[in-house]
Amino acid sequence: MENKQKWKSQFMTVALGQAVSMLGSHGVQFALIWWLAEKTSSPLMLGISGFAAYLPMTLFSPLAGIAADRYNRKFISIFSDMAMGAAALIYAVLLFFFDLSVWTAIAMLCVRGIGSTFQQPAIQSIIPQLVPKDQLVKTNGWMQLLNAGSFMLGPVIGASLYAIFPMSIVLMSDVVGAILASTALAVVKIPKLEKTEWKEQHFVAEIKVGLQVFQEDKKLFYIVTAEALCMFFYAPLSSFYPLMTSDYFKLSAIYGSAVELSFAIGMLVSSLLFSSVLKINRKIRASFIGLFAMGVMSLICGIIPPVYAGWFFFAGSCICLGAAGNVHTIPLTAYMQETISPDKMGRAFSVLTLISSATMPIGLLFSSPIAEKVGVNVWFFISGLCMIMLTTGVLIRYAAEYRREER
Image 1 (cartoon, helix red, strand yellow):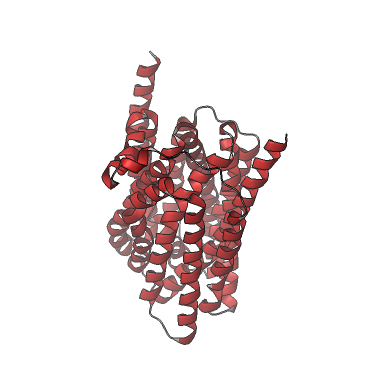
Image 2 (cartoon, helix red, strand yellow):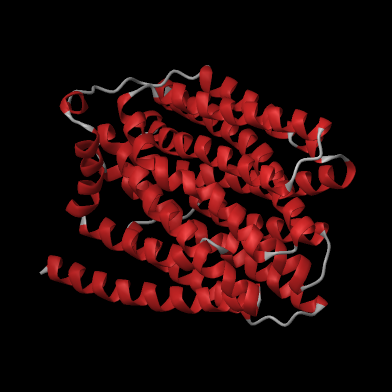
């Protein structure tokens, strides 16, 4: 009983710390993107900002995964969080004294992307070190629940602060979040891993180890393939949400934050269900369903008319999008944490990050000119339609493979 309470208290300390950090990050991210949207009113510029934020994940994900398996995961996570906080502090000071161009905000998003790239596989690999395998779905549900709460409150706080204070003051919330999250993680004792394999491998060989995890598990291979194909169309949408509100529906930043809030409500409700009553036996199948639902809701967002009442349907669709995203992510993350060897966990998650993040900048380069020409709502429709077709195609192939294995 004592051990059970111990892992729960340690997990909650880490999870709450990360939630506080994400609260500051989501607020600053929303304020920065809205600042860019107001100053430029350009899907192309927002596409470039998203490109800058995700390009570091593409470039550094392999290195981040190797670092998470080779070195102290707690140190990597704390250092990455504090580095992002320090960057926010420096940018806030510069912004206070100088009239900086929009390109500096894009550079700031790039720096944040580098920090996040190293932090994600470290934190994802720490969780199964703290939590029993049979509790991973629930704990991932709790992680997503806290993430949803941060995602829900962050934009509201960001929009409120942005309406009252200059951007230099808004950035300080990221600094406070980084300090609190790092302190919470520092007080938790993370069990050590036995590491022998990596000592005699070079960089390329270690990347191959991460890739082999997906090659050896066909179920994982199919769902990750479907995700990679769909993210090409879906990932750019996150950069276009502000323009759907400001340009398509012609509404203010408060409505923009309400859209983010709607998305977070969907995440919150679904996370609560996963962390309490939902028991998922076929995790890969559930992940496919979530991916398909994301496509359906994206398509619906693209056909809503640009009237005031239409915005409420858009917000409702965003609730469903947030829920569908969790239905895809939570079972997939739990499946990986259950089945992958602990000493390969960081590299496996970094490969997953690499696959999804590589599609983001490519997708933005492709989608931004199209959205500039035909409108962001059309891209929502195109991306939803393509996601539905791609997920269906991969799911059919997966089902055929699964039936063959059962025989």
